[in-house]
Image: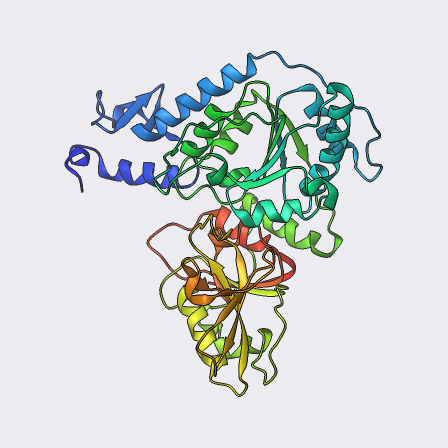
Amino acid sequence: MSSKWNSFNRPLLESLIRKTSSGAYGMPVDEDLVFPNPSRGFVLDKGVLYLERFYTQQKQLEHLLLKRISETTSCIPILGELDDRLNEGQKEAVKAIFETHTLLLQGGPGSGKTFTISRLIPLFYASFEKAMLIKPRILLASQTAKAVHHLAKQLPKELIEVIQVETLHKVLHLSKELKAVSPTLIDHDLVIIDESSMIDGAMMNLFLLSLKPTTRVIFVGDPQQLPPIEGGAPFKWMLASKKIKTCFLEGSHRAENRHLIDEANALFRGEKPKTQPLDSFKIEDVLPRFFQPTQTKPEPSFLTKYKILSSLRVGLYGSLELSNQIFNSLKEQKGRYLLVPIMITQNSDPMRLYNGQEGVHIFDKKEKEQLAYFPHLENPIPLALLPPFEISYAISIHKSQGSEYEEVDILLPSSKEPLLTEHLYTAMTRAKKGFRLFA
């Protein structure tokens, strides 16, 4: 342990780290338990103990929001009809962005967040163009390419051609170290940030710093999903601050999985779902659920009905080990070709491939050159030229955010790290028809 932690109450430090990893900036404490002047690297402010980095992030976020709220908002008239399929809560959200420049759109799976945004964009585009006599610049962005392209698919083709769809890393010109390689100015008329719960404190602050004061922005997300890996949960903090206009979309409009979402929501009331012993999960039992080897070359298929989700990436029941076991078992069967799911794990702007994007590798037992296919690319790419990737019969719960499958098996092997309720909620809400839980 670093020397700067040596003089600090270790159990308190461990509790603080667990708290920040669950999405909080700091932890309320009894000030008598903390030294009057906490060790370097900590801040005690009004009965809340912070790691210095998260304290700085929260204060900067608060400053940026107060500055943004103080800006005068110009209203844009709604020059068109609201879609009749929108319910009252969704209509309120659509109207709100015409009246304010910052909006939080909150809701769980199936609440209609994506549908609301898909109806908002055409109306905003037409109204802005008529009122301002210029075409609006609209940006769709998210932490992952998978999430933003999923939202873009819901829009009319003619709109996709005139709006910008990017990852936040690309919008902010970020390197791997979260440093902007050049000054950034986001001067669009409307920015929509999907899966906002995934954005960590440092990235959120950089985004707000880059945003032109007059730009309208909508943060879309579900605060009950997993907090960012890097710590801090600015979307959840903004909701709790009640300083920004918020629209909450209630319930689920997906009749086929409403009971699953109800069961997931019950986790936050302390109710536990039915589980099976972890060792009762057998690879051989699930092999038939994947694409089987064939003698004829298959067409690339990106429809994934079933996925294994693990709380760990490494280990006997980790996603890497499970995926490799499944691949090795299937390739030993008869048949020349095998359709293998893969997931990109590192961004590559030149190849238009980004962390979290899924594709398929057509494994050919007789050819040296192996090819990979992705739904947004017209041509296949030799496997050897891909950025880092993993076989993805099984993926981590973290990587599953923004995805949906008909059925999932959720594996929760024991770990030194505490399992958050948000982990289980995120995993359960990936399923549209059913899940099995092994723990």
